[in-house]
Length: 239
Length: 327
Image (cartoon, rainbow over all chains, first blue to last red; front, top):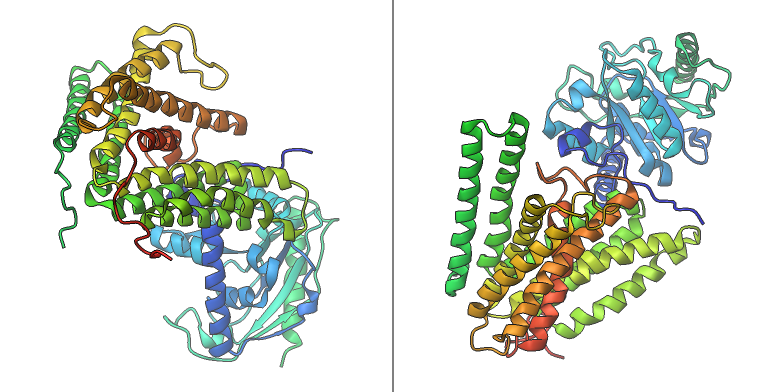
């Protein structure tokens, strides 16, 4: 019998630091808040957007895995969240832009306690942050929902994937699940303050793995390119 | 409705409040002198001001509910228990066991409800009942690996932050609770300060160097002497005319506050050493976590409760089962 318990990864941080920490781990209170938030999101997706999910059988049986999709709206993260069920839903974290969602303490509290988001700092992502995220993904068996274009598309067209995605999975066993979202740009483009009702379709593709990719810039770019192609491929199949 | 009938009815209440405010001002004056004369390094001055400022926020948070009345006192103890649980479960890793954390949190709520209801039978019954529930709660998950560890961690948590701490709130069922409770919480603080001060002034051999490298035997004995004397002296006014008003009992009460307080402190040190962490949290600037500040109170609450309960009774003659009603 060995001792199985260890302190939380965010122990000793102040509240403000903890909200933004990649080591933030949910306790009972946060878990209940996240569940309540997911309930709201599912209700919103069902009522306002009649979210239609296909290819759910492609989701790996258990975490860890990455969910990557095209990005044109704040609805994207909500639709991906709503598509997950059970253990995967509880373990899912959206990787969200730090400068948008974690800039003030109020938005950071919302991002941390409701959405269960982890911050990604555009342009100043440190190797250590990516290493922490990668380690947590495997050790804590998490699901990361991320949008490798880095920002919402301003014209509805999908942009190129950034290589940072590769730093999380290159040379490892963690699968990446490509997804294509249709309808989010029409319902809530970056130019609108609030969403309007509109049909959303989420198509989940077959997972990709990159055990052969090298954990360096070249390997990361290869991962990003292949994931981008897989997501585009799903999009082309839709009417 | 008058929120705090008789809040200041007992002269000892007023004396304790005056002494507390006086001590805070005195500490501020000393730190002020140290700052002006440049006797302390800037880092030390900053640390001292931070600690004092934290005390200036903490003390009202402790004292005002006690003065405000029974319900406020029990509510504050409930909140303190839940905050301690949160800190403890994050430090030990128990927080990953949502079910057991939830059962302990429910246990804390239930035992404080029993205090609020003034139902001693239920208050006492909740110890074996909650421990039993903790012991069986995770069995249906069919995960025997780690069973002893998670169950033991949860029972320990319930004992400290539920069953033990709730005694503090239960005391508020006695009409004369305000000066007692103030004396207890302030004496526990004084005990820490006395141990620190006499340890620094006298020095000498360490108490338990592997557990807590800064504590000395002189500090422990100094705190014991100082706290016992202060508690016995002030207690003689509070308990005048009751069977508690005897020197041996008052000395026993004072010694219990000091010994149980220091044991609580060493208990938390043992937990932290075993986990390999310095502080339980970072909520209180200059102090660390809530448990780093309130550790001494955890064992003092049940120990002194049962001494007073044994000697003069607590809440005797007061209406019971206020919320549930008699069957």
